[in-house]
Image 1: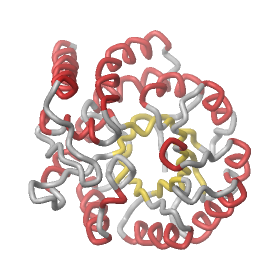
Image 2 (image 1 turned 180 degrees about the vertical axis):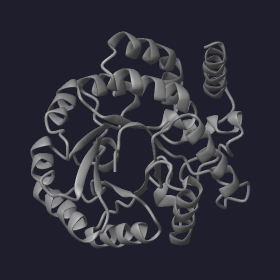
Image 3 (image 1 turned 90 degrees about the horizontal axis):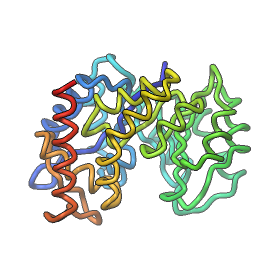
Image 4 (image 1 turned 30 degrees about the vertical axis):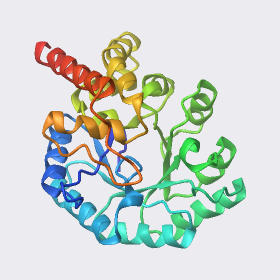
Length: 297
């Protein structure tokens, strides 16, 4: 499995009655494949995994696997706060056809570094899928430190990390751990270019839901070591990235889905839809601007 380049953390569209909108999800998948996305994450934090019922999770993942039909890797979000639940969900994701598991650091319970080491080792040993570690302290209230990552990467089933901390020190520390058997993927759109120029093999992106071609261009430039091209792509994306900062993910990115015919803007409670107003108008404007740039290219 070659995890690299532009990887989309997919949003999960819901219908007007709150049910899964698999027709819209299919359009979103097609939009990603047409735009050059190189792998897809189903039911991660952007996909509102913790708002999905068990049967919905299974239907969503099975649908994605069937629709993608092996054209790119499908990665399932399987991280839970408890280790046994994470192992069980990872096993089920394997049965449903996922190619790998994205396993977030245990949230809310605030484990120690040793606790996280043992947690991820258990998932790698018994989950049955290649494991991508996922560190996002702003959501989990714990930080998977580079020293712990160095201990985890020795397990053959632990194949990489999505590191959402975008500060320079963390980027450099994780880049030093990357190698042929352990891939570093950025988890922060704002600093993705910097991370990839420093050695990240790609980025698991939120904004790619809306502009897969533009984000693929950024990834191609940065992973190719093209500093000038990376700067150009980053400058083109910057206004949209700034517009998406108006609300917690995935509220803002879902507000962009209707503009592209890719589903409803509504998340599930306790998240609420981005209201009509300046923030939503700006998002609409920036999407239109990027579409115009793409048409002119």
